[in-house]
Image (cartoon, rainbow, N blue to C red; front, side):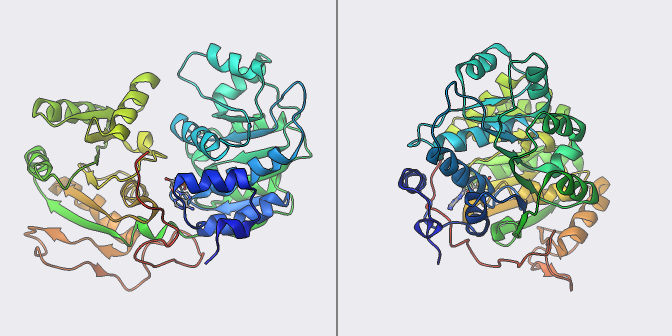
Length: 411
Ligand code: AMP
């Protein structure tokens, strides 16, 4: 099995990786680190949860570390991410992996005051992680300058498209030097994404991995058939089990998330809600409480949850079924990160049967019903004839736990 040492990484990075508790590179890291180190453009098809952040951050840090620090310091690496949560997490990863390199980074995103971000930029950074809207504001005010960027990373390009940021992204890219290295990640390669990739990549190396085996294979999935008004009593009953140590509960709407968090707190279950209407500070506090374990339950909507990377989420509860079936897979992928097991429990009211059918069609599997009148409690998961969930064509890693998984630790 490949070791990080085999990937020609320098000691300050190997040390940081060891301290993170990583034992082996993930498949995407094995494939991407070499070409990025060699200066090649990269087209990566991989989701969050596969270790893709380190797959680009490690070789980029190494390329920077090897070069003399320019004076004055200027942005040499630009990472674009669709959401503030993802941008912060990428910034944190650069901080962790780069802790012995002396490389300076900052993260900018909207929804918070601009001044601290402007100050950090004026002081000079090597790596800038940004969401497109705020970056454009800073560019227009000439606070950020991108004319000497050497490497561009575009992360989660498909979500940029979903969220309507693609024009902003193109405008940012037009402010970059043409001669640069570009690293492009997307979970799916829809036609518009291919077009964008073709426009901005030069002779890219293509790497592709299935979602971490964990996102589907090691999650115990179950459905509870309930009337709508029975959902809260059922959730309260389930939460009495201490095995539900760290739980994300998904609702369909922001209002639903607020209401449920209130109901839970009213029943002495410590819960925070996170969704798009909350101010940045409140979202960060909610996430921090949850990460630290001071609240056991995070109630979230789909958009807000994307990219949340909290280790050791033991259970995902789908209080409402998602409108878009793909979100089921994103939701349950919050548990069982980095090779650990996990459980996903889905509440389905009679009004939601169609949504459940759409999910089962997508994952090509019947989810066993708990205490189920409809299909019987003990019915095992029945795979449909076609292969299980596989959004792209890379080899499926079907293992009980990813061998690269680190020992469990909370961040
Ligand atoms: P990402 O796909 O970059 O969001 O990473 C998903 C999770 O995997 C994060 O919690 C990382 O800290 C973790 N991770 C990344 N690389 C490794 C590795 N080589 N071994 C174990 N865990 C890893």
